Amino acid sequence: MQIKYATILSALIAVCLAQSQRPQVSDTALEDALNDKRFIQRQLKCALGEAPCDPIGKRLKTLAPLVLRGACPQCSPQETKQIQKTLSYVQRNFPQQWAKIVRQYAG
Image 1 (cartoon, one colour):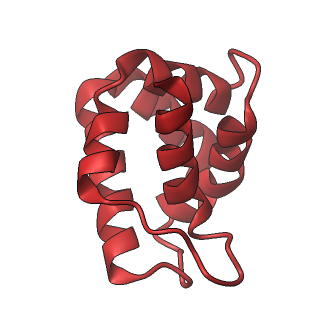
Image 2 (spheres, helix red, strand yellow):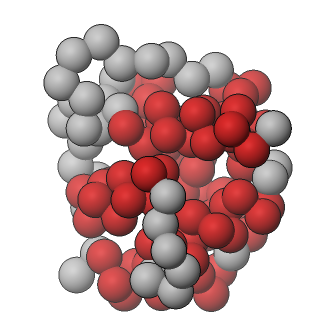
């Protein structure tokens, strides 16, 4: 199950870095990944430098400054919508971590 979520979130996060064909992530698959709070918490801790990073966390750390500044020129409208949904979810459900991420990456 964790591999499924990792693949889904990895595909979503990687969209801004991809140079060629990008995997599409369904809205249902994204919702499933967002509902795995332990997985999300691990990725947030990685992004904040509080825990080791897996490949998804490493991508998060790379993309965080770009996405927080609204810069993802390679993203499709669907990908942009999914990224916004993910950020909104983190903002609502993990407000303390969100504030730290904004301080750390948005500057």
